[in-house]
Image (tube, rainbow, N blue to C red; front, side):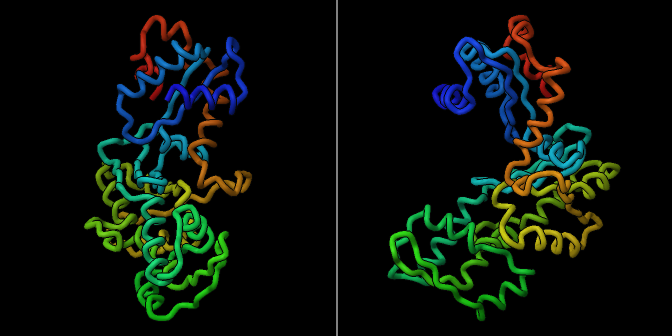
Length: 296
């Protein structure tokens, strides 16, 4: 990690050795306390930063859309994190992590395309690009089943000149988020997981969580995913029916993919000017555990 951070800070951000600045880190859901302590220790003792702050990704994604309470559904590369947040505090007991993510969908699409195009040799980077260009979600499970029997096909030329046919396969990756059995997982779909998560929180907080549900992560940008998610949510038999927050118009179009980063940029403009961060003096006095007292 030290080598990676050195590259990011000095080559990527352009810091100069001996003139290091302040930094804010985004914490993935369920980051162990020991990892946070190791990080703050590394930053102060190895990189000699002047200020440090860390906040959880779910909280920052809400900040990006102007909320402090809500529920984030982060569909990332290797996992899905569902985290209720109340007044800026993640409700860890009610949070859920699903070991399914964009990479699993890419591999699934690769398998489906290989079955449909047995003579074409695919590499994972090509499939990733095909997923970004073609993968989408059907309107509902009934529409998905119909598309399995009747779907328009397209020809696509790969960088090496091979031609691949893409038809019903484009819908399979997105459907796996709502029907994990496609991936061989005996778990509930993403909307049901969200409902169960919110239901685990005190009922007095249900409304503010439901009315402030935020989708984030690169995989959440799949064509039709947001519409399918909202449609599935309105069909929930439970009294718990989530509704999605629309990003502010002034935010960039890629907010969904980078919401935690954007929320972090917003928070950094508050905590550092107002001296709410961990200073070198704080660290020298309290040691690595100071991160748990000053970074919530």
